Image 1: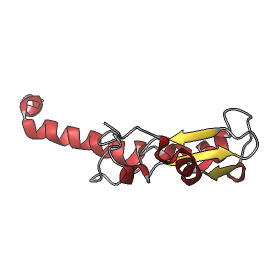
Image 2: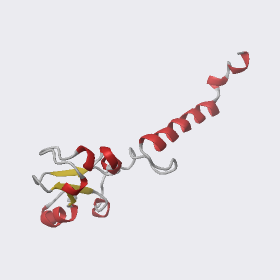
Image 3: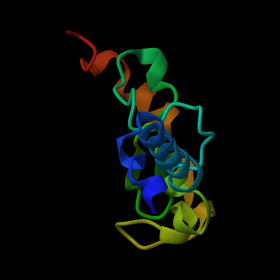
Length: 118
């Protein structure tokens, strides 16, 4: 027991603990490689080029649209995703009830959107 008394004061120990926490979050929470940027970093869209990565799914039954935040696509995959959760308005389930509609929305909005006009 005497051998481990100074462990909490060792900065390498706390570095290793921090890395283990980062690894766990990357592997099991965000499901990305540990060296990739974590989803909590750089989430602000600052250009039209970055906006191309965003997704929007429209329900074929009721027409409601779900806009998915940047780096949050993994929430909408598998059984817990669009197909499993279904539409929040009408309750339609299944991935075949949704279409990826981001491009049409961008065309409709066009240059009317002054979000990037500072």
